[in-house]
Length: 131
Image 1 (tube, rainbow, N blue to C red):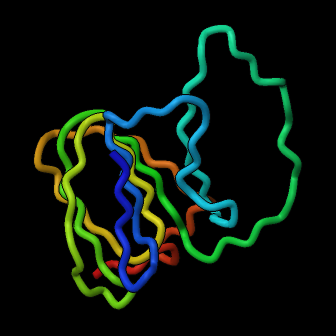
Image 2 (image 1 turned 45 degrees about the vertical axis):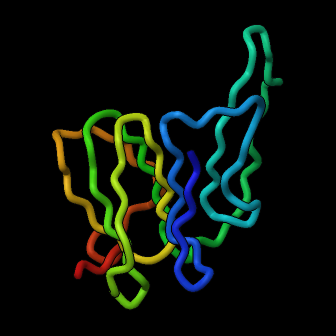
């Protein structure tokens, strides 16, 4: 239900399958990660106190992406920071993936829809290296 893809102790990705479930709150990322990802399951009637998030400066060294697969089937290839192919996984409707380090490429095995969430601002051609 949760799979970590690692290379040389570097976390490349976390895959959370559609059938994952737990009660309460489960963070998949450590506190120091620049992208936080959590699952929340609360009972009817639960209230979360209204709140604001404080403005604070954060330093981002690399872009992390979270993809929410809405429909279809997507093949993901994982690469080292040296652009070496490492391994692959398939993602299905309802799966979530955090892409943390290294490189990645996609092949759409079926028509697919997904949401992408990542840090901004987007820097165009300066934002990524294609290989």
